[in-house]
Amino acid sequence: MTKQEVIKILNDIGLLLELKGENFFKSKAYYDAANNLEIIEEDIGVLVNENRLQNIKGIGKALAQKITELVLTGELEYYKNLKQEVPEGLISMLRIPGLGPKKIMILYNTLGITTIEELKKVCENNELLELPKFSKKTQDKILEGINNIKENLDKYHYPVGEILAEEIIDILKQSKYVQKCEIAGSIRRKKEVLKDIDILASSEKPDEVMNVFTSCYYVKEIISRGETKSSVILQNGMKSDIRVVKDSQFPFALHHFTGSKEHNTALRHLAKKKGIKINEYGIFKDEKLIDCKDEEDFFGVFGMEFIPPELRENYGELEAAKENKLPNLISINDIRGVIHVHSNYSDGNASIEQLVQACMKRGYTYLGISDHSKTAIYAGGLTHDEIKRQHEEIDYLNEKYSKFQILKGIESDILPDGSLDYNEKILKSFDFIIGSIHSSFNMAEDIMTNRIIKAITNPYMTILGHPTGRLLLRREGYKINMDKIVNSCIKNNVIFEINANPYRLDIDWRYIKAAKEKGAKFVISPDAHSTKEIEYIKYGVNVARKGWLEKKDILNALDHSEIANYKKVIN
DNA sequence: GCCGTTTTCGGCCCGACTGTTTTCAGTCG
Image (cartoon, rainbow, N blue to C red; front, side, top):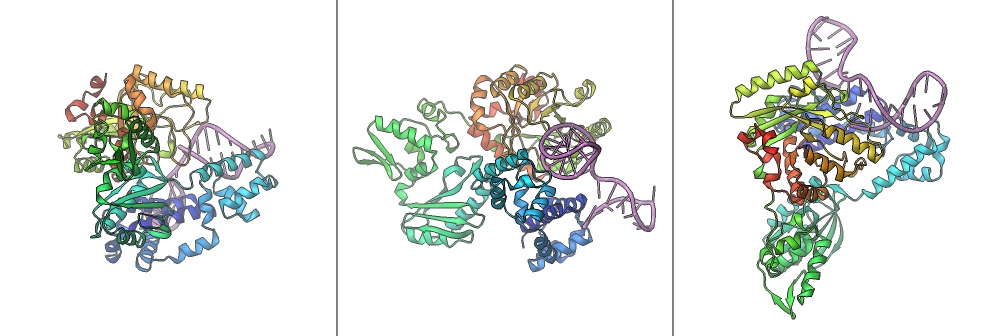
């Protein structure tokens, strides 16, 4: 059993224990253990064999024994029994807002509900009203939540699809029958959520390629299998399509299957005006094929420069490409430092020094620490004394690592009245302040907008953290007037965060281009709670690229010497 | 269930908000 599988089971046990109504700290122990396993780089099999699991923080005798059983036998008696006591289906019901362990167990114990489907039925039959503590309002809220989930049932977060797609491509590329092979569709366009995995290959023996694809380890079920196209359902439930074309057709097919639909339609429209027909097999003028060796040639036919896949959303890329005015998009290699990282002073699990070393290892030259502020008690928000202690430690580390720079920051809660979480004296002591909303999400649009604008006008605020508060596939952002917020940020020199956590990816790329044109600045922040999560930056870069951003638009593309004076640089 | 001890068990993640009631349990961040 792999480490990832162990982590999944530990987290499941935590959830099952919560449902069962066990002591919260007991489930927390399982989550903590899973979390700490995530960080260690050593092979879990080796740790088990050498009996060293208990050296890991948060793993004691009981958990070491359970993990050992899992790794050696692939099973765990304790987990099996737990699943018999508490049906696994109840875990998915935790995704419905307003439903927690207690209410789910009431539903299970009184009505015998074990799935979201069953819950939906009883809601529609008004059966919930008969239960104590369940009113019409609760029932409506649950139904609304179920409908939200259903809408997102066939959607996946970007990394889920990216990782799978890369592994499938690797398998295909090992086949001698595959000439070219690339990921197409929404993954190639770096969309924030995905419905399926599109793969394109070229081959002289398409049938052999189909064999490799449909018999691959990740495939659970074959929906269709033909000479040029096959569709499958993968082990995790995601759909995947492959198209196989002749090698000479590859550039045309790659463009066609990369999309988006809107981009393709607009381009076909343009082509038609010139008497040109486009499809997945070629570009045709008077029935005659115009040869292209790659996508650069493809766009060249229309007098356009190459359009990066991320921009193909019909957001003005065709017009810009014609005038040679596409942006020189930011790349991951342009990123010089990391802003918005939580240490173990609040709810992160690495020390500042560990974070510094992780940044240096990745070639970054500065790190902006931003733990939670005092209102975020659930996340171990920092008291005045802790801030003082942290700053002393940062001063010490800045001397120790003289070629690296640690900035003193805080992720300050924007309180319901729009004020920040500390008095002026404390706010003054930071190099930068990220203002974020973590409470009272359900405000009317104008009140919420004013709340945020009040924070933006606070002279100490540097960055607006996860500007809409959305959680992808789970929660809509709060209602705000983005136009007013953009204007206010620009006026007050407040930088927009592109929160790179793949479950957030907030601010949405659809807002970015217009904001940039007005003069907004951005920072790509991992919002990391461990050294590993620093890598989230790459997802933020995807979003920035989709929003047409260039190196000059991004705060943490500034180099080591510039960042010291970053306020002056931005202003 | 883990940790750190004052070594045998208490502390660990608390406070605001919501909805259902009318004083509080459950949810959420």
